[in-house]
Image (tube, rainbow, N blue to C red):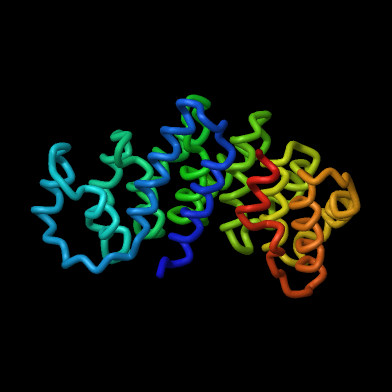
Length: 263
């Protein structure tokens, strides 16, 4: 069984694959990363890691089983904080980058020393993994003003992928996310991807998202285009949550529906 953080990383990575153009070189690269990421997120019963030998293997790009090692480090959660520096060093390796970020996210706030680097990378337009960066930041450094400020800046970006990435992370901030309601409300007028994740973030805030009710009601009653169906369903579910009804993700927000939206 994956923990909640592992499931969230897996969902976002699958979402990223679905939004990639089918048959392109980029889609093949993303599919390969998804395959490796799913391997990393499997909760395998591996033996305890010896600190020195583990570090030696991580530094040797010819060593076998490095993905499994990174996976096991992440599975240990905060107990693996001793390896945070090693995981940060792996962020420069394309073959381990996503896996290392997932492990840092599962270590949680004990890995916050990675936050300054990830904040810089989140606002770098050349990065192609903003979704994973944002989610990792929300897991390792949710309380700092520096992280919240870079998320606010990213949320206002004209780049839909950047804005959506920030919305994903803000949805993980808990009560601290209430400060972002005005910015999330503006995202509801944007394209499908940022709009969808803004709705998800608002749904998690409950009554604090009341100022966005009017915008959500317009979406819920809006365009009947089949591709808009998941957004309407998401908006209806968010309205119930904000009005104190239990928030239940509708079936329309499943991966099947997301494929319909971004086909």
